[in-house]
Length: 324
Ligand SMILES: CCCCCC/C=C\CC(=O)SCCNC(=O)CCNC(=O)[C@H](O)C(C)(C)COP(=O)(O)OP(=O)(O)OC[C@H]1O[C@@H](n2cnc3c(N)ncnc32)[C@H](O)[C@@H]1OP(=O)(O)O
Image (cartoon, rainbow, N blue to C red; front, side):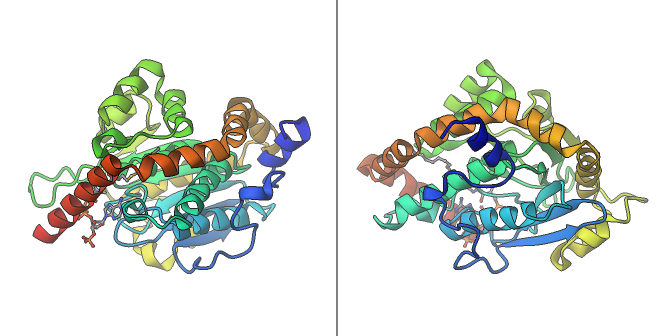
C-alpha cells in the first residue's frame, strides 16, 4: 500500500485503497444540496458550500456528500483550488452530528465513522489547494474540516456593541468537554497545526479559540473583519451559489478567493509534490490503522458512561436552542 505509486495516486486524486470508500465516485444516496458545488474553469477555482441546516453538522450522508463533491471537482483538470465554505453565516460546521452518536444503530455507526475517515483522507490528501472560509463556529469536527485544508481564513465575527447582534465565532477541538476524545489522527492534526504544547493544552481542556487567539497560535492563517468590501474581486460573483450570491462583497469570501487565486498560479505538480512531503506519512499511518480506529470508536461511543454524557449534551443543546 505505501509504495511510491500508491502515494502518488492518493495525491493525484485517484484511489489505490478503495475498500472503505463508501462513495466510489458515484453519487451518494442523499447528495442533494448538502454540499453545493460551483466551478469557474477560467480561474481554476471551485467552491464547495456546506448546506445542511441548521448547523452543517456531519452526518453519514453529509460526509459522503463532501467526499463526492470534492472528488467530482478534483476530476476536472482545469480546477486547481477549492474554497470550502458554508451557507450559514454564523456556523462553518458544528462538527459531528451528535445524534449519530446517541443510541446509535450498530450497522450505521461503523459506516458513519468510515465516512468521516474518508473525509479526512480525501480532503487532507486532495490534489487541490484547499482554502477554508470560516465565517462562523467551527468546533470539534468542524475544526477538523478546517485543519484538513491548506489555508484557513476566519471571520472576526460581528463585534457589534449591541449585545444582541454580537457574534464571535470560535474554533477548536472541544471533544473533552463532551466527555469524548478526538481520535489520534484528528488530535495529531492539531499538533501539526499549532505545535505540541499548545495542542496538548487545547486537547485536554477542549479549548475553543476566538479568532484573534486562533490566529496567534496558528490555528488559522488569517482573520478578516466582518464587513462588506467596496471593491472586491468581481469574478467571485460567478463562483457563488445562488444561496449566498448576496455575499459577493463579503470580506471573508473575498480573502479566501484571493488566496485560492494565489495557489492556482503555482505549478500544480510542484504544489502537489510539496503537499505530499508534509501529509502523506500522516495519511498512510491512518489508513494502516483504519479498522482498529473504527473498532475503537464504536467501542468507546457505545460505553454507558459516554452515552450518558452525550445524551446530556444533546439535551443541553436542544434546551439552549428552545430558549432562544
Ligand atoms: C473515540 C471517540 C471519538 C469521538 C469522535 C470525536 C470527533 C469529533 C467529535 C464531534 O465533532 S462532536 C460535535 C461537537 N460539536 C459541538 O460541541 C458543537 C455543538 N453546537 C454548538 O455548540 C452550537 O450549536 C454552535 C455550533 C456554537 C452554534 O450555536 P448557535 O447558538 O448558533 O446554534 P444552536 O441554537 O446551538 O444550534 C442550532 C441547531 O443546531 C443543532 N446542533 C448544533 N450542533 C449540533 C451538532 N453537533 N449535532 C447535531 N445538531 C447540532 C442544535 O441542536 C440546534 O437544533 P434545534 O434544536 O434548533 O433543532
